[in-house]
Length: 544
Image (tube, rainbow, N blue to C red; front, side, top):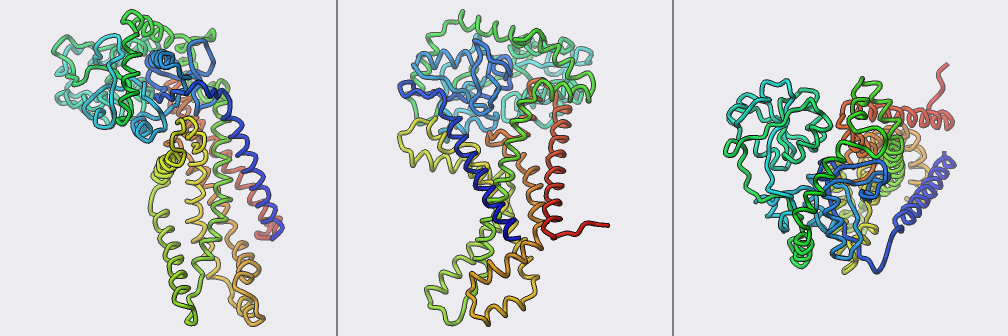
């Protein structure tokens, strides 16, 4: 049993070392001391403003935190021109819409160029530039062409309709202006909205009219409702703008200078090109043809997505595997420390200071386990990532944001989250196993004069580990599934990859079914491996 544990520790150390140096090597490319990067946050799921592609072209840009994918669209071209005006190197960071403003305020990105409007709510969180839109933003609806609402001329004509928008945006909040509407709870992305509309689970979606033209080009069965003047939505903003940190008015001035240099004719050309590219891929197949292939049947859709995006699935699955395995191993080591602290005995003969120290560590262990087990891992991941980033930024005072992001990476935050979460649960598992052990060997060792640490590591823990190894294996399997929440901070794991592929084809059911099969394969494989190890170590016996 000891040799197995020793080998596991050595393997974990080697695995972590290789991963650490591979991350460092990977993140050193394209660095230029003379050219300060301009990190631009965008959703990469809001065509024609911004979307993802899986092939490099002359007009798209690599997505820093999603290897193998590239950002394209009107926002990308505007960001390019802003970066050129500032003589800075453009870096695109894919961030969920809900996290853009937080990422900006925490310094993860320099600016937001993601079709964000200068609404009153947004202005409370950031500074906003002059609008870079071609013309004033207007909202309309996309509905199915055979819908009874397709001929609506005013908001009142939509009474009784089920309408959905994007969470945290004006596309959702303006729905309440429709009298008698059924306001469907918002979803996270535009592709998710389109998927609902194509499956006819809603009657319509609120959309920017410029974007509506692009989506209709991909899905000609959809109809655009463009309300006459005075009959549509009231919008209390000027248009799409660049978001800048409130504490950086100098950067805002630079952005406004860059935007002012982009003529209306240039903007129109860029938008026309973005709308055109929304309907055609760089390959011979169009997005429309690919979308039709991806919707022919559930099974064929899954095969199509797996074949055409296999590198994305592999990258996501590898991210899930490495953070789950390493997190479980590190969490197990921390759990041993927690159990050792919890089992500390306060003796009558201890000095007052020693008694105080022992009480402190015992209380700290109980407090830690209560906090971790009583809060969701998703919340823990957000706190660890953003707090860790702020601390790292303060320690690296004056360093470029790109360097801070390299020092405090998504992987580091994800690994710490899994490790701390695992430690809390395994500590309780180990404590329960220790309390159930026969006390005779421990008492005999005390009589022979053995110290507490020796008794713990040579008598108690070997027995406890044999009893709780199945639970440790279950925790590893749970971490494989639980790591799915880590996409909230931008870590590339299986659910991040799933969202990428689903958003690329506007098809969520097939993508989620494929993700479920990959998760099932990973968990079954790990379970079989753990059972094999327990058979070899004699923890479980082979059934005859």
